[in-house]
Length: 152
Image 1 (cartoon, helix red, strand yellow):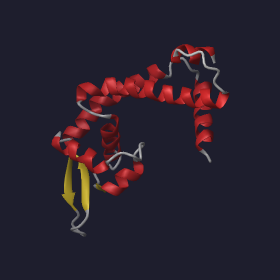
Image 2 (tube, rainbow, N blue to C red):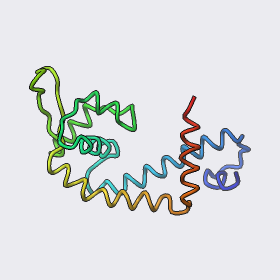
Image 3 (cartoon, rainbow, N blue to C red):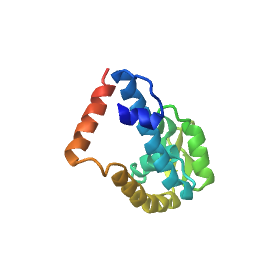
């Protein structure tokens, strides 16, 4: 726990559950900041990047806002606002469903796909950099523990 106390610049005697949760929060912010730094030159937030990857996964098929929201990593994201910003950047386009005119569908544009082609290797390298101090076995164990932590 000394390492965590040094990072937090505290002498507090944290309980193990406290230290664990604080460490997860701290690690999450550290990772997020690293990704944001890499995405900044492309004028993308993490949530916008997530939407673009979801849309690319549709392989040219349209998807509605509700389905995008369900697939988002951060469920608190305002998907409508994110999509509006991506439309302004010409990364996605909005269309009206041919079979149900009340249904709005979203498609990734060629510019969105081209941007992902540029950003993907940068993100891959960032992920490798973030996890470089862990072995394959440790990465597997960490993933197992994080999933176990979320099972209520």
